[in-house]
Image 1 (cartoon, protein in one colour):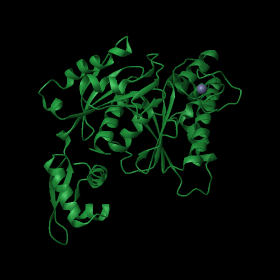
Image 2 (image 1 turned 60 degrees about the vertical axis):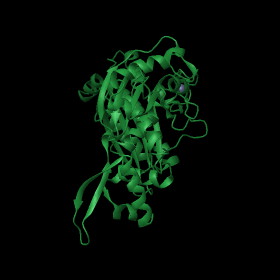
Image 3 (image 1 turned 120 degrees about the vertical axis):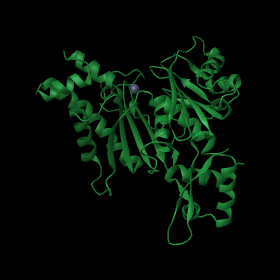
Image 4 (image 1 turned 120 degrees about the horizontal axis):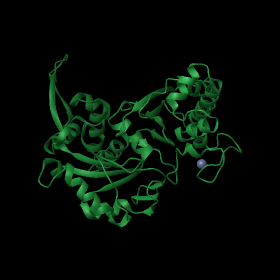
Amino acid sequence: MSCRSHVQLLRLINQFGPLSRAELIRLSGLSKGAVSMVTAELLAHGLIETRDTVHGGGRPSVRLGIAADSAFFVGISLADRPVMVLGDLHGTILDRHDIDLPDRMEDIGPHVRRLIARVAPDGSIHARRMRGIGLAVSGLVDEQGGICVRSTLTGWENAPLGPLITQACGLPAYVENDANALTVAQYRFGPMREAASFSLVSVGQGIGCGHMFGGELFRGFRGGAGEIAHATAEPGGLPCLCGKRGCLDTVSSLAAISHLATRAGLPGELEQLEQLAAQGNLGAVELLHRSGSALGLMIAQMVQIMDPQRVLVVRQGGELTGLFGRAMRQAAEGNILPQLAPRPEIITCDVMADSWAFGAASVAADRSLFREF
Ligand SMILES: [Zn+2]
């Protein structure tokens, strides 16, 4: 069972469901016969299940929803704090573990096999219905080849993580950039489920960015789309780890804010700086204004170039409601073409610490079920 109609209906049910067959016919444009046949096959495979009966004007109809326990996924984040999660097809995290990584990249396959046995022991329903493993890594990724081109965390270069893990675990393994993985998670299982076109910007030790357009991740020619972290924000500015100067990462990332604050004799934590700024400390006000404005201006440029419906700005473990967030919003909204209507919404939110690993699990779900199977 692997055809376009199956994927199309599964996507619609995930996005807008539960849905009746009549609603599926209307939304998909498929014939009544095709929807009947495909939903029967999806039910037989256990991927969808019958839910409540709705009584409208005509005959009562049964609504169909995604069956949460029909497929499970493991997500591993190789970001600054490696985490593994087990997720189901409703996007619920069922289990999580802080994990270690092997010293040698060559050992990643057997290492991941041992890790997975902790959340999906042999013979368990989780093991029997495990559909794939996702890995979220920082930096550039060759998603087709499952290769981590460069990881700053581990120092691995051109690491064929996907093939090594697939070989050891006997399951498909997918490697994705961490901001892209978070973008997929927001679309498949999060608040952006109904927004087919949005851009995500993550503010952490570094800046991350992903674009979802028409329900597809936009990766660019080399997989480098969304690398706004290394777009120049201050020409001739501070040196960046990438070798350039004045990248957004040197002004607006939490690492940059901390660095700039320490140089100015201020505390390095964003929350402490926000408190000082609220008390009228000029140094803190200037710094947060500079960092927030640079990010906002970059978001405005991105909106002009990509024209997303929404921009979701996320930060792990904290809100962006202080001066940094206000300066960011002001610079973004003040520099977007006024005639662009309706105005792209800029939404800020806090994401949980396990979001990156959950993003990785979402990539496994997305690639194994919402594309082809
Ligand atoms: Zn850079």
